[in-house]
Image (cartoon, rainbow, N blue to C red; front, side, top):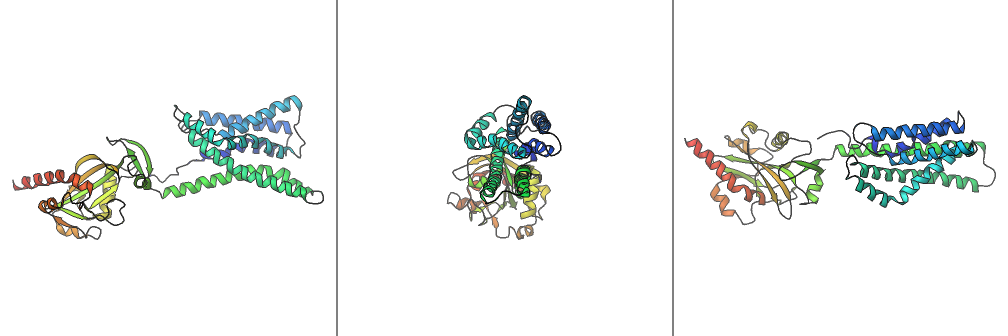
Length: 372
């Protein structure tokens, strides 16, 4: 399973505020109109990059809204000159940027539903994820901006004029800080999410042929029961024409305590069958000669509790001392007569009862071959 982060920085939609931050900072050194032109240019180039770059195309909806606002301000300054005083320019840009942000947030359900429908089209598979990330970013920046505006409101209500320091902090430094904090909070959220996902197991979703068609959290494979098919590896053990069976551990969610073959596990996402077998054997049966392992059958098993594509393997053990390992010592060898006496009595697991006739035939064939 990959240890790389699940989300990239492309899903930090607050990066779309970079053109506004550029304009606000540049206004401290150059004229208001030039800073708007440069910010609009940065936004246009960044927008083209998100749409035409190689790899997964993740649309940054907040960037497009911010760029559109700056282009509109560019047209306004060309026609009418400066839009406000130099002192109020940062706050004006903050308010102008928040207008499309608030519109998106207030219409977030309709916006998300539309992007989900778009994600079904070619080259638009990530539009739904982009929309979800945009809504998260709008919520963060609105909260930070609300704190800023509330602070301004309280400062104005206080008796006496505002000092120069207070005015500089509230009207010059806080507006860019609102957007910078939004970027940092969202990036921290992505990093935290990726750290959590590094320790989260995923299992593949497959069809009845074994083709991987998706993935899910391993816990969902149990909680959602039979909504989709998950691959499972099962390994039976035989010795001298008998099957080694043991009670299913109490930690098992399915059919705990019922007698079954000794080894079973979900195939992990990104893991090959060989890797899964090695992992399972090392955990439960480390001394077994893995080279003697033989693939038997692959079959689809579904009931009200589970939905599995099972890969069944069989390993024959010559030395019965290997059956006394810590992980499987609670089992014992069963003859076919003993097993058949208990079939259909809710004693064995459903999977084992489904596999028994096949395992019996394979083992009996091997025993006859040994006689010759």
